[in-house]
Image (cartoon, rainbow, N blue to C red; front, side, top):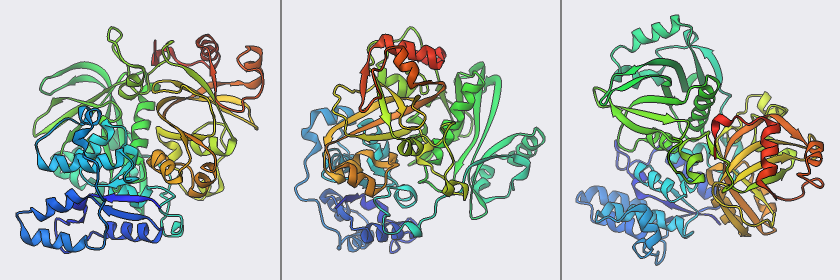
Length: 501
């Protein structure tokens, strides 16, 4: 049984304290019907009892009566390593937040559901962000494990497509906040329509559910401090009306790929930051940094695709901060990872040789495979994989070739507990509950990694034999020498522009 820890603050509706939001009601129903155990942290109860608003505290406590409390949870303050990452605090609310996270960190709970962006940012720092959900993350995307009995109730979103802006309705509700924040929105919209600009769009029930508009610029940015003239890709609009399908991450991926195609090394966006700002949490996880401010509280966030050559970085740090750039020098070990076609197709839905499935043809959007952060499960006994190492994925059985490259973020060894595997792969999962259940019958290796690229010139099995990189078809993860990696790198034509060594 999966243990789901609730941040009690999600039970407080800003407009009506006596009402639980519809999204949360549906989520709690799904979690209960799929035999998950919802738990509360005792410090959350104490925080509510000490609420100066007695009426509010009483209402929230009444909502929590049916949920069990975690017994004798460990104190994070006694864990020096954890606290060195999170940072010590005397603030009571932060102490509660840290305790919630620590329950997940120490596996006292499999997942945490919270709307608090400070908690989400801390989860990124300690490497458990895949186990910390917002309500809509858990409701709309979450894991197949949550919705195994209710699959028919939750619809997959339709595909994302590129369409001319002049075909879109500027009065769609997704533009309401933009129109409020930018006085010249209507004039700007007419301007980009006349320019023939296009947008990546995802529809929900006939309305725009998510939109991405990009533009190449070569001009200074009027900000404090000012940014000098430079070729940049601007994310003019990135709006997702409902979270959970990883569309925000997919839009970041599209922006980065567009920048690479145009040989632009810097991406930026301007944003009116808010409290509990999920967009800021998302973009910071992919290397965007706030470096300036514009008028009216608007912040400028910049992502650099290439690290500075005269600075020293850890291999894993390069992949995170300067994605898609990655370190491929001798300090990073290299591994060939065999993967069966059915799992390759799930993990890498955008691979050029992949055949579209019938469900996708009918409109289903396989978002997990389109994202950057992925998970791979296997029974390999190969040791020594660590953060920053390079994974070279070999599609076996049908095309028998090296297709793709990823960089390791974290590895869990010899896991046999189903719930543990589910919690480790978290939001990255492309596996159904049944598949994980079958895999977990043997000691399992769970590898969390970032996908970086598919090879323009995939290397065939025959060539791997000719180069003496392989002696036969790979049946398990194989470590290769750096010199053999360089042979592969040359053959598959990896762009040196985005490698650091």
